[in-house]
Length: 431
Ligand code: ADP
Image (cartoon, rainbow, N blue to C red; front, side, top):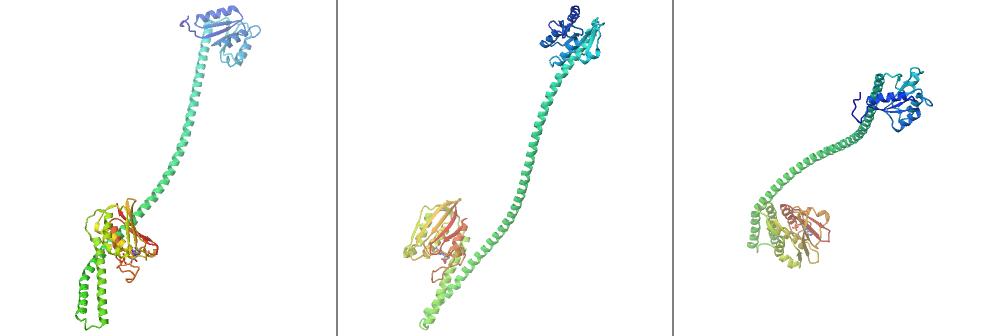
């Protein structure tokens, strides 16, 4: 019975037998059952047929001339191409059949003549099924191997990536640790700075308080001193006028000294009052054209400029926010000093301004006597003078007033100088 569809065969079977009758019989039976048999009559032909087109199964007669079935089977099993083809031996009943040798050379089974067709077919079928299962197993094995290899490759890749990640993690941990340490240091520094800042703030507040107290004291003292001083001076003058004829020359000189002392004291009090007024001023800031402030300064100093033949120059000064009269006073003190502390040559004073870090930097330079480095800071303190009255008149308050005005305008003041080389006073004012 053939249940196969046309064109498909249950299997390709090579029948090897030197007896044509057997060949015919087996071929008919196999064809009838849906197999596709090929028949050859000796061992050599069998080997050729297998090499050109390997069958799914071989029915191999044992007793054949020239090359018997054992030898054919041995040949087939020695070649990779034919090694896996299942071989079933055909033995005649009267033949001497060495089963042990048959299995030893690689046969999978044997059938005996005369054939029991159903048995032959059952054996063929079971060996073909076995062969197919083996084939499938092999293929699955190959697939599995490929899968294992690819999984191993993936695993290796993963392992490598994991290692890289581990390295990266430990690197990051190290960086994090270093950052934490730096952070800790920064925190310490910040708290130290906070501490210093609050100490500074405290001492600044203390300074401001004592400055205000000093200002208040200077104001009250100088204000209250004026009246008794005026009384002393006027009574001394009255004494001289009324008793002029009765006083000898020495007494007149003494009275003259009293009047002179009073005048000097009045100057000191006036300057002190001026100093205390800087911080007390309530005048709001306005736009001040510094060119005009300098022109006003020059006008105020006209007498001294004429007497000393001083030359005061300036160029392109800016306009700043400030207190006009205080800025004029500041420039006047600086230009006045530049003229007062002159050398033999006529004073030459030059004023410039340039932008620096958001501020205006003014310079007032002269060709005067200069100031030794060790005195350059203390001259800005109140009553600090470097000369006697006879050498240069003054109270030692002018630069202290300048510093106060500069600070009130958010700036600062300092000097650079060499004795005999002139001086340059620098002043910063907020833009
Ligand atoms: P005063 O001029 O009344 O003495 P200041 O406070 O204006 O007071 O100046 C303080 C001191 O600084 C002066 O006594 C003088 O010795 C010095 N000084 C100020 N300006 C100059 C200058 N341009 N050149 C040299 N010395 C100066």
